[in-house]
Length: 126
Image (tube, rainbow, N blue to C red; front, side, top):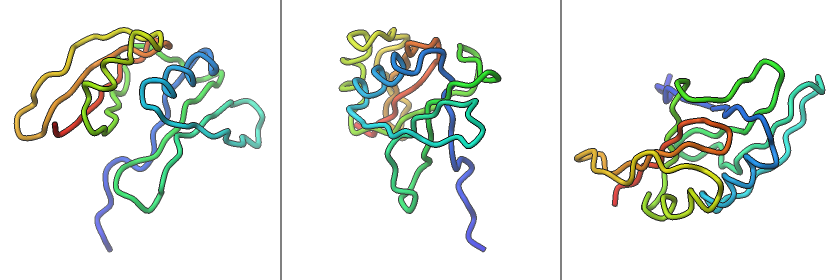
């Protein structure tokens, strides 16, 4: 059996779906798709993904049990150059926490807080 990557899916909890969707669309220049919840209690929008490609897919999730905010799971989005996303964060309603910095042989990281209070990161090799 082939060893699997540690992360297969992620959820980012949100309070206001429209606001969060706007933030991620703007900062990542990405589309999100509606996901069906058969129970009707969860609103979800998934990041468009190729499930056969390297990396994990995930979604924005609004649910009674889901509470966004700092101090939880840290998600890092893989991007070409995190300076690009850094330049979009504040205009999209987020807050820049730590500007682009080197992590040695693993590239660079920018840290931000999204519109829902979640700490997120962007990682690039240049």
